[in-house]
Length: 327
Ligand code: BD7
Ligand code: ZN
Image (cartoon, rainbow, N blue to C red; front, side, top):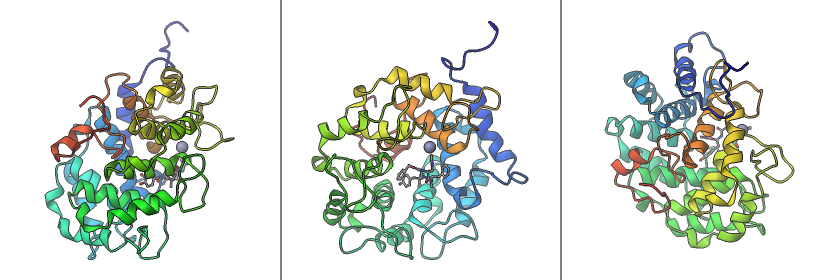
């Protein structure tokens, strides 16, 4: 009993590195590999950026990752989630993020990606996620983040893009997926992150939003995504990142949230689950680590709250990060 490591106060660093690296090694046989087949590109981003936070990027096979990403680029410039799937903004952003982390963005034709993203903007400023025409503020974020990372925000209409996001703001100062949709912490991250990147935080009701976000913390220390919902580790990121961008991180109890995230670790296999006792997955492992990094615990590598990428990767691109504290 006294020999046992108390995983409610310790981050199982090496186990999490092993957990992420093993996802890659068992790809042939594991049906659930990196959440699922169509999310492979996103899964790679979660795993790779998780290793970045753990300062273990060298554990990945760079050439294999680059080859996979290149095999997912389509003639129109967009990237798919897996070789046989169709291109989408969600997976295009992940592909660009990974290529930047691997310092391999020169392996693709950047202009074709920029054109793909720009043609998805609509007259009202919103973005389609792909050729099928679904609109969601997640896609506004993907487009804005992607073009900013590529240094090509000039290719879209930023005035209408900001106006559309502003129409998704609700009476509680949170944001939804489309105008009129209820506030959700995930959508709030995408909207606040996108506005931060295009320097339009003037549109955010900062104090009221800070209040709505810190009401997401429950007595168990964890955060939920909407009123009346249970806590989930990934909201450590969606809520905290928005609080960080508006400089209100100290409005929630960081120590209690840290303890909640640590309780969601699997002390046998490594990895972090959505809730204590559940099976871990790469998505919650990544966002749990992101939350701990944002709060400054355990000397983890610093992650940027608006781009969800390492600050070192961003500074190398010459991006300025006024909302990021310790640069
Ligand atoms: C999409 C686009 C962005 O620009 C930013 C965020 C997103 C959300 C997207 C993501 O993180 N991409 O990098 N989310 C997912 O891919 C997850 C994948 C998943 C499926 C099943 C189980 C775990 C993860 N998806 C598609 C979700 O719907 C998750 C599901 C879930 C996580 N925890 C409990 N259920 N939900 C989710 O991501 O909610 C946060 C969110 C919602 C809307 C917008 C932004 C974030
Ligand atoms: Zn979750």
